[in-house]
Image (spheres, rainbow, N blue to C red):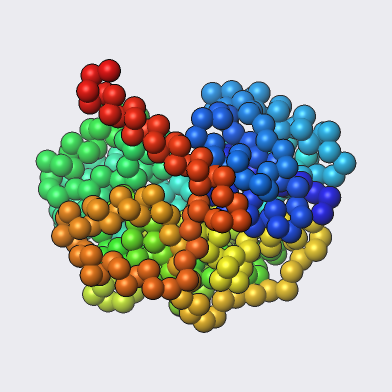
Length: 397
């Protein structure tokens, strides 16, 4: 395996999942991050090289130069694997330049951003006949009236650009109960210069969330896919997966595959759906275009998405495959799921008797792995550091 895999962002377990997907295949893995602090993926035994690089936004030109200079030193083009939306946006902005030095599945500049952007994604979905929750743009002059008549309460205020919103507020969306909260949420977003939309909440608990994970080849045909069912997420109700099982749902492929084909999408993507508890219909909520948080579990279930991408882009395309049965395998993000369970119980949405049975199945942990244990202790050290810092603030030190 001559082509190296360059992994952008090492301060979260997504990078770790890519390392554990490619490293055992004897693929040379290069881990990058703009800071060593919290970058526990650097500790993985599958890291062949690691570098502290310029910041993707604050030092954008320097980061681009860094990547180009690194590639120039290689015998063959490396592959790029972004582990966060910010890195995807960077790649999309410099796609034409980066494709001269790296193997990247997407060829259409701007499509990554168009799919990530909630506003343009809504338009794409409507155009191609994919069901989405009713949404109203924040600049609509009749927004309040339309929320009352079309969306209703409760609803959510969610970002057009997720990274900017999350950075400003540390949450993925605002839960809105009434008009006063709506106006307050819109003001906060405006003050932070973050564009938002107001969206109807599809009925159903967190276990009505599903994912369609797929890889599209250079013809935009789905070659590999898996479907999953979320059980818990953090923050609860509107967060990222903390406990998810693989579950076969053919209908998600029926919706997702033609949509990706129509867009001309290439490479990996994950559609998040919500199943309406009243009608049973699936609604597209968002699309993740960076490697999924579920990556390690999906590999154990039968599809190693980073390896699928590596093999296709290096001219060694694998046979198409889909997981068309329930494997009962679960993904578990240890740290955040403990926080989620605490919140579910506190808000009386779940009881301990509802939670304990979910662990009676094969589980793939996000960080803990006996065969690659150092990142787990690195994460524990990071958590302990946060706790110590918080404790010092509480006692006035």
